[in-house]
Image 1 (tube, rainbow, N blue to C red):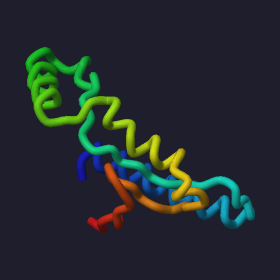
Image 2 (image 1 turned 60 degrees about the vertical axis):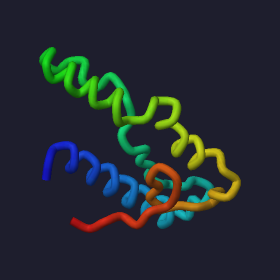
Image 3 (image 1 turned 90 degrees about the vertical axis):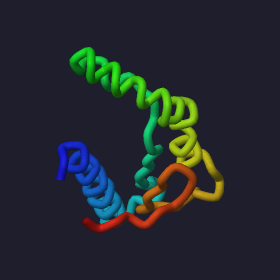
Image 4 (image 1 turned 180 degrees about the vertical axis):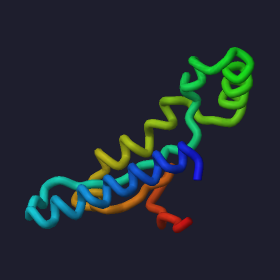
Length: 102
């Protein structure tokens, strides 16, 4: 598993544990969900060597969505009335997904 993959797994595990602890503490007004916007054109490659930064930047401009579009799944997860009270779910780009086991 890559470092990126491990960091994503840690996010899942943290969210799952937080949801469990909130449930045990009978704190019902806080929801915990995971939102994955997919590939978003950010400036993460800025500290890479110039040739990698150029390559990654070019690929992102061609294939990734804008930061504004990448923010939409998160905005939906926190503001949609249909998701009020929904907790312990994984949302990928446009809707709920089942997390895959690896």
